[in-house]
Image (cartoon, rainbow, N blue to C red; front, side, top):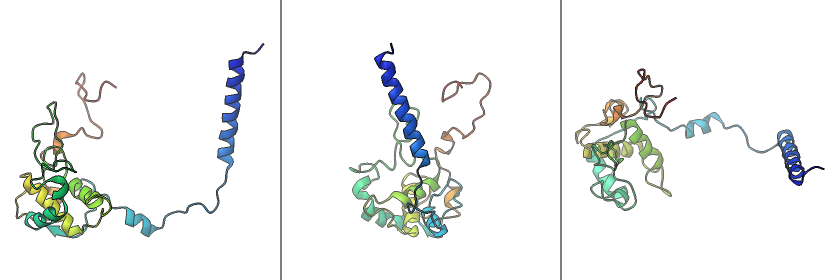
Length: 191
């Protein structure tokens, strides 16, 4: 006599097999389309560490100060530290090896181009996300970097100068393909 649980298991396996076969055989027509080259270009706005994707434009910390006061201080605080709706943008130096890590622009971020990219894509928050001009993004990036004592207040940030900014934590990340010495402690466990 076949047990009751075997019957149930057989039923479940049979249904899953049928569902899998049905899902693979379905043909959809008129649903979706391949994006056009223009649509792909419009969405391809990420900027990597090299900065090769940075658009034309420029800005200084002095130009960024009034923009920050008008569009950023409400969330991040007047001094970039005491905001009620956004993370701290400065401070936290030397905390990455402590038990209480403060991930601010000056203490955590490895590349200035990443700061520019984040501001360009995600600030100010919804519903006005993406409304900053490239010049405003360069100026805000310069302002934040200046307040973290990474660049001087009158330094111009543009597609050439921004990738050359040496962030305090640039060397703080594990390389994509790290090479470890034999018997060295590995930060991500043994493998």
